[in-house]
Image (spheres, one colour):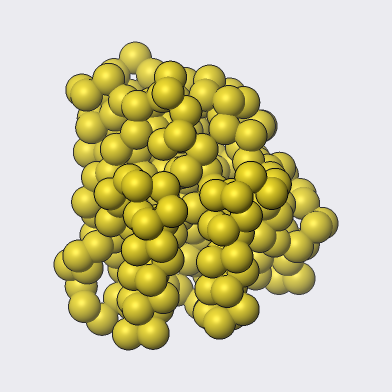
Length: 225
């Protein structure tokens, strides 16, 4: 429990046996529930997660969004925290993000990685791609946001059903933020966090995923989903 709130962490994974061990072992003691979504891994991701006390949800359909759509509804906590299984997002700042949510009466907080505290944590092509997508989000939705692609979110679990996310792929990350921003009943903000070098193999296909995200932004704006 943290400030009388039950905290759940959801981590989507595909072949992250090394990274997920690091992440789970690093989580603060106040985390009540750890849900690892095994996105059809062929390594020991599930076994490692279970050994370290996580509840494992299996999702055979490949995709970042598919994994999250399997894991997020399984949450039983009052507050949901998401992060990747590669050690890039700061478990040491979960409490700060929750404080920002609660102290400001917010419903959804997105952890912004920019400006990067560690310049070596992300290569230049990924930085440019993130900046382009974030700029397009600003133009299309007229909302200033610093990091539209962040994979660390902190929100009141009860609002998930109001977000109506659809993407099975990487665009879910931008979709869930836009849904929170567009909902007049929800209060959205960002909180600046550190970003670490990843553990394990890079799974992102930057060009394919970048164009997919860009196209998805246009579909959301044009109401084609």
